[in-house]
Amino acid sequence: MPSAAIRLFVSLLLTLCLTALPAQAASPKTWKISGFPGGPSAELALDPATGTLTLAVHRRGTQVLAPSPVGIVTERADLSQGLRFSQRRDRLVAERYTAVAGKRQERRATMRESTLSFANAAGARLELVIRVAPDGVAYRYRLPSDHGAVLSETSAFVVDQDARAWLAQHRRDYENPFLPYTAASAPAADFMVPALFETGGGHLLVTESGLDGRYSGPRLTHEPGTGAYRLRLWDERVQVSGPLATPWRVMIAGDLATVTESTLVDDLAEGSKVRDTSWIEPGQVLWTWLAGGKEAGQSLERQKEFVDYAAARGWPYVKVDAGWYFLKDQWDVTDPDWATTSWIPALVEYARGKNVEIMVWMHFRDLDTPGERDQWLPVLHRWGVRGVKIDFMDAESQERLRWYDEILPATAANRLMVNFHGSTIPKGVHRTWPHVLTMEGVHGAEKRTLSTQHLTTLPFTRNVVGSMDYTPMAFHREGRPTSDAHELGLAVTYESGLQNLAGTVASYRARPEAERFLERVPAAWDDTRLLSGAPGDHVVLARRSGERWFLGAGVSGAARTLDVPLTMLRGRWLVEVIRDGPSGLVRESHRIDGPRDRLSVPVPAEGGYAAIACRWRPGITTCDR
Image: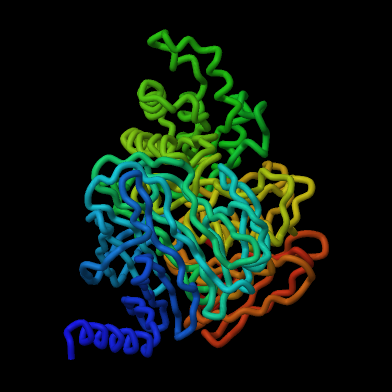
């Protein structure tokens, strides 16, 4: 056969063979990171056709997070597509640490970590670090070399369209209410993290850990009619110099109790940068702003009255809010002795004579430069002030986050405990900077548009990630949605290392059972248990301090009986319940004979209760201090 004919025959044969075989798309490459018994697991997939990555989360064989995009784009490298796998490294992370405040003080964190390395065609490298814990999954991007400013992430979180969702629209100070939706029915808007979803595999709380001035704050952008929530950064360009490790993208996953009791946000954060924490002391604070306003803050005599009342209750702190601060405009700060013109040192001396310490409010604008911090913080320390409430930062831009990086060591150096208002929310700060005992970042008691639906959502959303300065106990406020007993229970339901109590002295004195309970309830805890709850409907939380348990309960909507198990109580216990009576708060006692016993308390519409449990002994009738 002539050679030309041979070539034609071979060509036809190859064509027939190739057309006879259907085209087969390459299968995705997948990597599994196994979980702990009963906990979630993660699966990362690489699409070989596009070089894109997705991450899925499963729990007990059910999908909690659908395959969701993962990737990051910088000004010099697109690391969201065209990726090729290079290697995987695994290790076990096991840490113990002690927290000053929060859901429990002694913490143990155990996580499986996988670092998967990828590169694009140009040789730019991406390391995706994934951690799986008993209560969730987290990942972060690590760029081993400098790729310039970060322009965006392709990170997204995809859930069932029909999944129930509790979301708050994004606001620069995190002070919007949480509202119920389905994942698909939520409007086209930016939403805050944390965001809570209920899927077939349980609950999923999307949040963040490890945010600081090396990066930029997030929000979740919803694609209408879908269950997809795409992460968007505050800054269009995040400045980076050298290698980068981004904050953790955190997905707390499990039943509602697992989510509520989780400390995963802290577990992922850097260890404490404050070596000696002996001066950091959580406690109740008599907060005087809603109780007296600017005028009370400008009166030494009024503040002494607040100190007298706090001393009588055994509360360790009084916070002087904005009023005193307006008087500073009368001071000549160029005078070396300008600080002697304030009456704050006299108040500190008076308060210490009664075993009460003073905290003060300051505006961010007077602490936003190194010179101002050097001027003010040593003076507050010299006056004997124990803590500072800093207000109106109102941003999560990289520039503002760098300010946090500067104010945190400066306040620690001056032994000033910190309460941030008009701020971001805790994203691991309580572990790294334990003198930050609480932060606002909540649609709280200062607002006039509160609902019990929102209040009974907060324990499962905002308060999961860290201490929350809701400022409860404003018994005197008109339009308050809670009954008295529901409001009293917030001292337990809401965790805050500094529990700023917002009521007037008169309103407390009119409620002696509230006074008695608030004298006993602490602000730091050894354990936390969710006894019953449903976001937006009701919550019953128990927290332990030493050998005592404290309970807080509240409902949204109709009257009902809250019947809960007390499985944490072994042996015989006395439980004192403060609930709503026909003409005010009433106290009643229950005896619990073991973990199979239950506590049943009738509550009115929008009602609740507070309770103390102590070990029963013959002759014991009350849980005294």
